[in-house]
Image 1 (cartoon, rainbow, N blue to C red):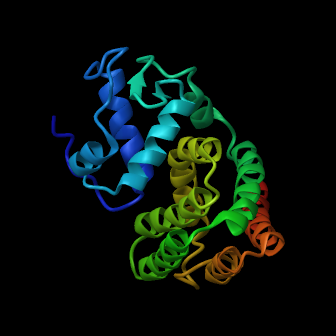
Image 2 (image 1 turned 90 degrees about the vertical axis):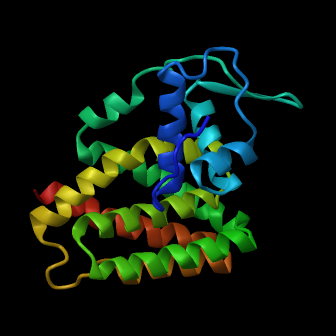
Length: 229
């Protein structure tokens, strides 16, 4: 079964949504063994690591379960609750406070656990965010979220990855609203570049304290803006 190739970014989130739709839509019934990572990666047009993170997010939502030596099986066709609905209805300041708890810890773990592949992905994410400075607000915000997604993925903790994947759609829309409402890019199209560069540099250097501090400072600035509205 062909699932259809995905757009470039953010891949983990898109892959998760696409696979979840196959499950909740009845394409894969409870008890069904999913195709292997290689087959899913080919169908979705992404790498195996992206598929792996998407499956972890689905496992966190209670939809699939990996069985040692047997594969990944569908165990439910509805997520464990409507966490995504709760997020969409939550105040953005509340979402940001929880985001800070999750991402600061993820950044610190990423600094301790990042691999050579992660380093390459992080540098690429920063470069794409800088390239997006020449694009519209939607593209810039998407590139910003993708960078944060790469930092969380480098922590190699499936629970953190799953949580951030659930946060991402809400963050993207709320950030876009914030950027447009406050015209944050009118004077600086690459708003926040210094802080994001410091974050990536700290993770790459393995400096957990600096990584946590850089991310905490960035999120505190945004939260302060939100409280000022």
